[in-house]
Length: 190
Image (cartoon, rainbow, N blue to C red; front, side, top):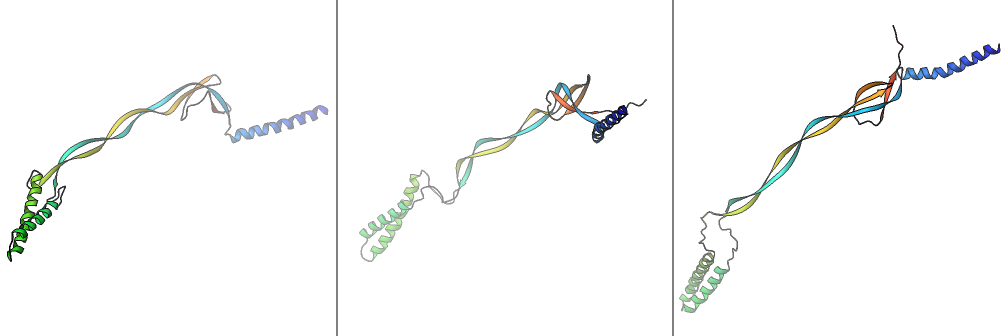
């Protein structure tokens, strides 16, 4: 009787130990995880064309019209000075009733002489109906696409050994010395 109670106790303990293992195997789809040794890793690459826009600039010279009557140094001082000087001379030489007319005529003549002298100093005779041009430097730029080809790693071909057999798989990241594998055990049916 003692032997039979030992057998019953051993059977109960074995059943309690085996039950979690079989439930775990069923939860994992009949398999378990283990580690395999990595034997070779080869990167898988593809060529990618990359655009690198650069800006190219240069100087151009172009003629632009100058608006009539607009030039640097547009001072009225010579005309005013000429008018004052002409008025003084006209009033000095005019007599009686003609003195006012002589003063006005001297002012007009002096202003005109001052105007002519100002334009003669510039080296040209300025006329308001002439179209004048000036040359200016203009910076021009354009964007140019420069293309380069670059090899980029997209995945890894990994060879590994498990239980003396060689396998190959494709992975997104480079593995270390070992990888985790899923092992499924099924009964062999004849």
